Image (tube, rainbow, N blue to C red):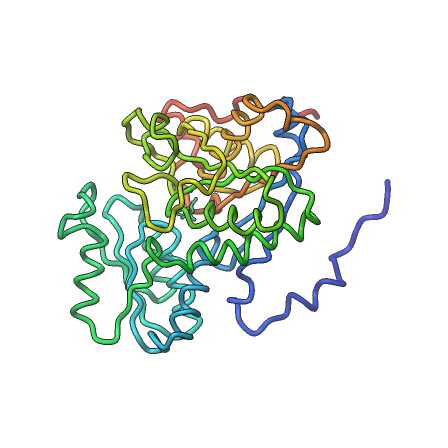
Length: 350
Ligand code: PMP
């Protein structure tokens, strides 16, 4: 047996920092082994682990950049109130930045979102304002309308607005994309990324194509959402359970032509692959991460020329499994929804 490697001491100096905001970005890029092998994938697959960000998701990057830009522009200062409509990770990310910098933070989120999310917001000192589930975005009771109303009522308050703020995609164009280019030393053929607001896929595409216009970017959109192009991909109108990707409107931040192609994914494949990423790779990632593997499988099927040993494919894994303990991370939930927990996994030996 070879030498057991101790902690990576040479890097520890870089891990001493002034605040936890310095631990947003510079996330690990980790090779996938057992999952691609079991799927007959010959290309080298690497995962960008966004749950390593301080607040646990890819959205920490945009919260940090949107706050810093608004401060630079003189729009906000510590002590002011940050309001955001977010049922997902952006709320947690903005609450984290507010905690670090001393802002008051109010997040509007829909009733149907899990109690865990509200508890994280409370732990970060933010206030969660619940709005009724299933109301259209233009209704006065929607998370966006309630956030706007609160902003009018509260002095010195500001909405960063991840759907329309150009700093959302810029965080990825100048951050995530540059990191990927450096981490792969420019040896990168395909990037697969989901789209919610579209900031990640738009920014990554813009950033990486500056380095290599021939690089392929694949956008991932759940069946039932309307973000994919061409529109004929979006004909099935259905509910989907995967969180963080997909919308029923196209956010201004998303450039639908930024990815070279789009792939649609199902809840079943997304959750089953997310469970496999934990079980067979040790990656504690969320459901939208599973959608990236579901898309990878379809991609190599459609483009066998990329399924060669010298090709490098990166999948972006946006958040962690701990956001979903009462959902797909639970065996009971998987069974109740008709999904298998251990599908496709090799027998463990010994
Ligand atoms: N997955 C998860 C779990 C998310 O929270 C988000 C953010 N909505 C995404 C994927 C997609 O990111 P983006 O908004 O940059 O498209």
